[in-house]
Image (cartoon, rainbow, N blue to C red; front, top):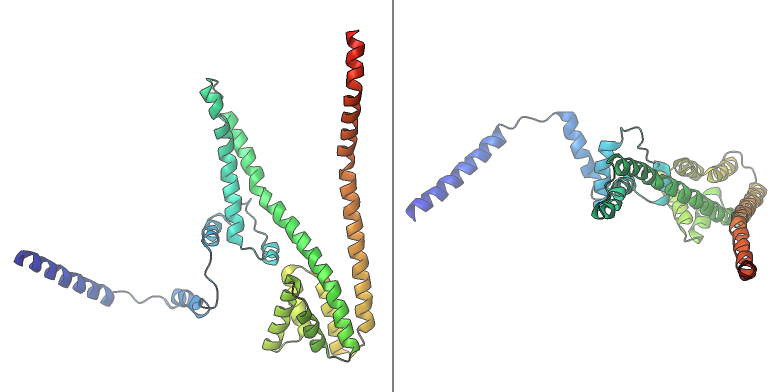
Length: 294
């Protein structure tokens, strides 16, 4: 026991001395990297912790972003409220699945004793992996397009509210803020956030709307900001301008919906014709069989 106590005491003292020497001999860090490491500490408490998938995806993105085929639609993802990490992780996961699917599909052939050349599943896996790798890009693009359409519909109602507030002799900033406070959807939440930031930073509200339009590529919102800028700088009456922009926006939305409905109708023409041909073949099948058997 005495020997054990001596060993434990000596080990503890040695570890303490080693830590002390290590702290005393640690070189002084460079100022630039030290400031870069300490800068996120000022806002880390306010920013929520990243999810596990987002953290893994950002780790992958840091290592794949220099490749020629890797492109992250930052604007569309920000509009949809998605992170670039989850996006790139989904792309890599789908690509890995595409590589494995042809290999797994050859297992029944191997069990049956039919050997396939190695380049067949390898080539098929590369093709499937490439197709699945670009699938999230098309999905995000379509979702962002639909989100911008939804924002345009909400903005049409917002323009009516702003025009009514201006007709009631409300100021430009007051009209924008009160009209945005009425809605509860995500477009109104974006508008409320931009106007709240403008009030806190002491900048004109139309400037905040212009920045919001540029950040998420919303040209319709930029038109509203331009109209309100004219009201604030030149004192122009914007009621008629807002009403005219609302009417034009509604006409554009109705035209887009009509074009989309026509496209959907045209896509249903081929399946409908094929179904009619199949029904005709089923109706004629008994008569044809009777004629052939007589």
